[in-house]
Image (tube, rainbow, N blue to C red; front, side):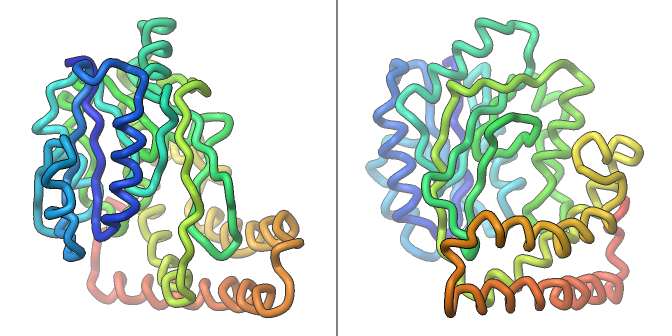
Amino acid sequence: MDFSVIIATYNRRELLLRTLQALKEQTLDSDRFEIIVVDDGSTDGTAQALQNSGAMVVSQANRGPAAARNLGLQHARGSWIVMTDDDTIPSPHWLEGVEQAIKSHPDWIGVEGRTVCPDPDPLGHWVENLRGRQYITANMAYRRDVLLELGGLDEAFPHPKCEDTELAWRCLRRGPIGYWPGMEVLHPNRPQSLLHLLRSARYELSEFRLYGKLGKDYGQFRRFGHPWLMLALIYGLVPLLRGWRFRHQLTGRRAILYALVHALRPFFFVYYWLQWTAKRVPLMR
């Protein structure tokens, strides 16, 4: 077995089935890769929907995507672990792209692919990686022996953010990670409710654990060398730049909603920060 595709999923049954359909259409011979879906405690009928999917299905209580991917790693047989999300659409040549990358660069221990959003929306969830050095698990491959040696992803991040960057940091100590545009995945926009957009501010807590682990190397992966400076960028400059980029979409009620979200998110972050401080959770260890 050459490749093990690992997908962590939680309550996204229909989107997951779309991803699995794209994997059935891969141009790489099907006997050269396996698909492992880790159901992270879904309650929407995901397990039943996967019964005839052809994928290996592993289930666990809801513990987050890092723990789910680590569980998938324990069951994987492929020489390379290829990761994507349950809301992506891998291109038909996706796995062939991984193979081309590692054949062209046998010294690489990891490969990140090109991730494209066909319909970005300033009030939705979407991901892009057009130039590399982002290491997002929506489109990432690593040698299995390296991941096993390093113990997989760090499951102690307070929220599902930054654990992919931290994994890349450890892997880069073992060897180079390349970028291969032919390894392409579509990541369509996923609409978000107002409450979800505001509550997503809690994800920034993970930046502090990342900083605590990377120390002086933090600046290699972030524009600034400290998470408080990153937060100033996220809550100050980014909304202005994104608002300008999507100015033709942000009219009327949507413009008011966009301004409201970005005016309130810093206060939500402070609320979550105070919660963690009160619990004395060691974010920086």
